[in-house]
Length: 591
Image 1: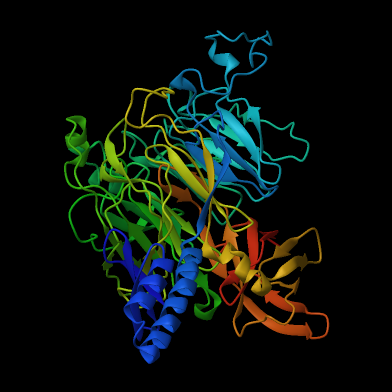
Image 2: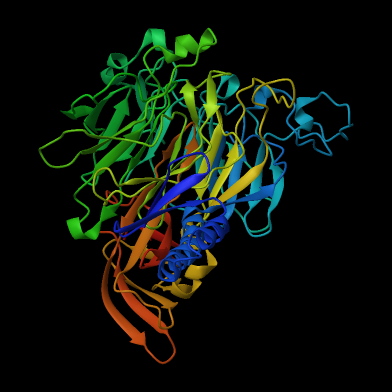
């Protein structure tokens, strides 16, 4: 069944591509009109009534497939420029500290401890970072010592968030946040600094030693490691970043897209070009074809990218990346003059393993930039947030992209994209989105203004917190949803690479022929990048069903190596015929 617009108030619907009919947004009017027109034709009336009743049911089904939006909070107090979901089911959000007072005024100053008054202009009386508890819908303030504006981050193997760079006094800083149960944990700033200023840089967690690679930044054409390889280790020049720099376009290679390939090498994409890089030898292994089309994909053109799900059927050796959206040539300069050029609607897919490399291009339903791409537990890609025209930057865009797109990678070309339910809240510059363990997508932020501004501007500072609920969360699918998922391991939910573990869940009698087990690495999300995001579909070896009680026990094989899945916490989801369970956390680690 498919549905698409044929006019302002009408839709055409098809069942299996055979039976097609039209209905208005209020399908009951079709039934009334049908009865009046066919009152003298009894047989025809019966047929049309059947179609009309089918249209009523179909309209409901289409709405269910479009998903739903939830408003969770009217005011988070802090713009969610950066966002990360922890393994304790909380979400870290933070903004720049240099934006002036936020909307979260503290009772007492972070620095002096003195009482903050209503008219206080002391910046230490305002929070710029919060922790959001998913289950209680509660937020608490956290303290940032230096400015993390336009920074980057990665989760380490113990669940600690490593956060790097920023602006001004924060540009070389390293910060850590280790989640805790009692709500008393906070940011800790390292005494060790990075070698270079990292503003608009990207992070990739590496397979070994809890080490992170940080690449790029404004007027910085190098990469470095945290922690350093040795006491004398400094930044390493990366000529690729020089080559992709667009001086007249605001850079157009900032926040480069980084993806760890399953062979242990690093895919780096900037502007329209990409390489496969051996970071251990500081050597470019492959230079891939330039992505077709004009315009750029990297900040401030700000498209987005994902590594498509890795599958055990290919032994995780087939690695394919996807890049969607971006800005037209000259968009950044034009936006500075108040002219907003239409963004790019094209996407490209390319396999980065093997020996044949070619971008396969296709179009989204519309132009988009500053979009987030989130991998769902089903393996589909959700594209949300952003704008239709302009570029990233202060008030550089117009035409909010209110309609999410769903992309199904395994469908035939031309049938992969669909449009979901629209939001009413614009999410432009400095907005973000993250997948939650319950299957919803948390959407927050948006502030194209240099400070917190709520009136007399086209796009005010946005502090409302939303969740998008994909169609698979509709109640009609509850009977197919695996419940009470538990993970049985030999230790504390930690599994070694290549080791077997057991997943137990309740499915009643609603088991489908296809039950999959996916694991998802929670990313650090900012500026249309979901750093370190990846999803794997694991091998299930043995299934034991208790038909009388509905319980299922399945032996699942862990990923074979840290190249495939770097050490750390993952959301494990049981997907029954396309309907996912609530995810449970599991940790993969070295022997």
